[in-house]
Image 1 (cartoon, rainbow, N blue to C red):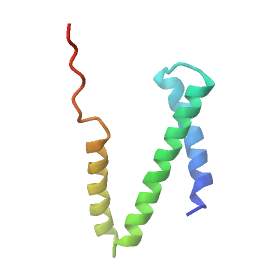
Image 2 (image 1 turned 180 degrees about the vertical axis):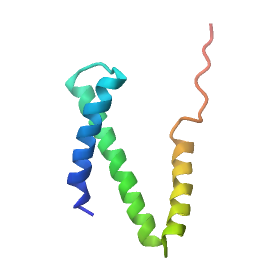
Image 3 (image 1 turned 60 degrees about the vertical axis):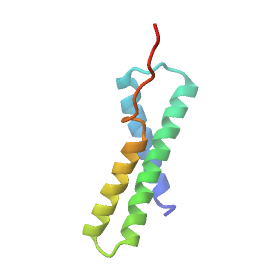
Image 4 (image 1 turned 135 degrees about the vertical axis):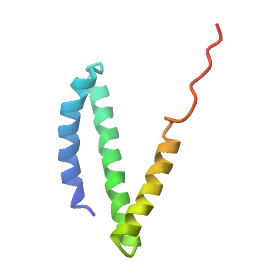
Length: 89
């Protein structure tokens, strides 16, 4: 499991170097670090989730069904489906 960390670190650095300027976020060391940290942790838990699901299931088909169910739950609770606040004018 620990062998994945250097690869994900390189992936995160490349991803942040490409996407941070493209999105147009405000440039500060603190904000770039937090964006990198969030990206790194997200990549880590998706890779580890895939490893866990594959080790718990008997074959690839069952693992893909289980991971699809977990990704759906992740999307449900990620905040994309939550309604925004109502502004009172």
